Length: 241
Image 1 (cartoon, rainbow, N blue to C red):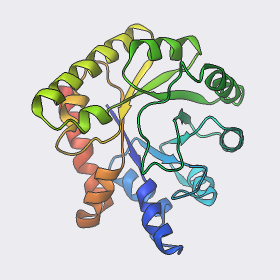
Image 2: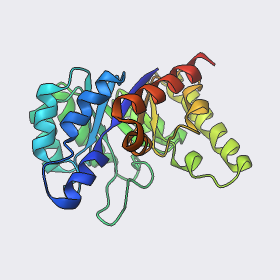
Image 3: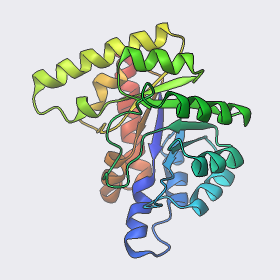
Image 4: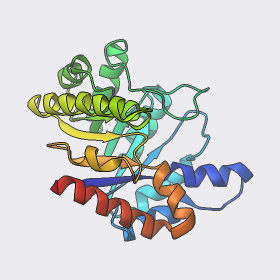
């Protein structure tokens, strides 16, 4: 079980004052000390948190995998192809949203996603698609030659009752099984916390979880290294069953 630590919201705090601290590059180093297997950042078109300078420095300093989340737009794809992170996760993006809402609709955006995957592959970059846990979306991701899918866990994380959360977990397990049968790498993320991550980590075949907000929130009280250590321990516990 691999843990990707999303450090976007360290940059959110910095950008609130348009200053130089806290520096997400320092946060990445602390996350690595805590056992992070991957550093994840989302370079948004509006640059609301992570800046170009951040990803350029992270590319030079991160010692684990660097996972860049970005939209299927020419500007972002050009940056990704020049930067060459270890992995690019293509995500939907709307200016008015607080955070990413739902998975990328690969079916509705087939041509754009196909072109994006091709460009990234030409640059030698491993491609993941952030999608809802639906078999038709997963099947098309495979058809378009993505190496992995990251299943959107927001509906599970936001479920208001235990019964609804159980139902969403069933959907995720079914989609996960279909993903593995399709020959794709299985990742998941969005809204995962210290209190709800265990059942997701326990899904058969789950390889990677990307978690940000909950880790950053806890790090304010216990420090980044400890916050990552605690989340990594839960991921391992879940994976062991």
